[in-house]
Length: 302
Image 1: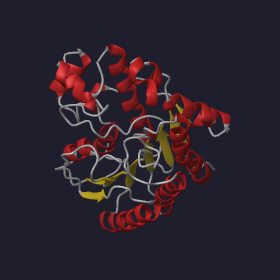
Image 2: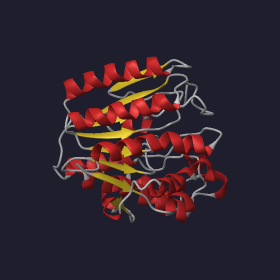
Image 3: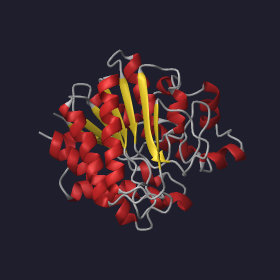
Image 4: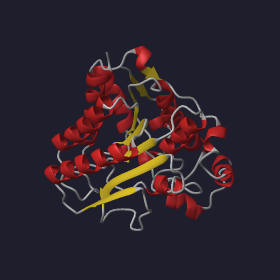
């Protein structure tokens, strides 16, 4: 089996200073991986800027041109969550390549994790919610276009619905989008995924895990994917300022353990992107994200 991690310093250093929290988590996760000895040099992927031809298979060339030339209107920039600049756009292109590289790294099996990514609010023609381009969508389309895989499942367990991902793949039967999210959370207008689970406010570990196991098992049996993407946001955590759920650190660990074990048992290559996390204390965010790295290393690094 194989275990890979993608990271570049621009994931944090190219973010405007007023958005450094919680984006600083990316650098802290990388440091923690090194501290715990979970990352060998041959397992480390350093992304450059993605080839734009892959981005254009998912995103409108008109929208991409506006991003690259910093021509998005002030309103479009506000909706995206960022004031745009060249460094920010270059950062986004590196994050896209990080997830594509992860997908390429595990075509023969295993797991690869992008320390950033999970930019599921990016639509084909616009950005939203701190997401300018959609990394898992671009990587999934790349796999399909290369003829490497034919039935791709995107498991989105961020507290916010993967609305951009749902829109991008609305008419693509080769990709199944599954989003389990807070029903009373952003976005207020939800897109239609292939399967949506709207969680009630204050959903706890037991309820969360029961719903996940029931629904994911059914999807895997019926859709039978040959590749999986996992958006493993930790904004479901009870300490999250935006989450409105009551999932504990142990609940997140059990969630990640279930997804990872399921992929391994079914021999499905898996790529993880980190998604959101907005707890008051950054250490809570980093600790929650580290579960998926530790478990991945334990299960797949052999």
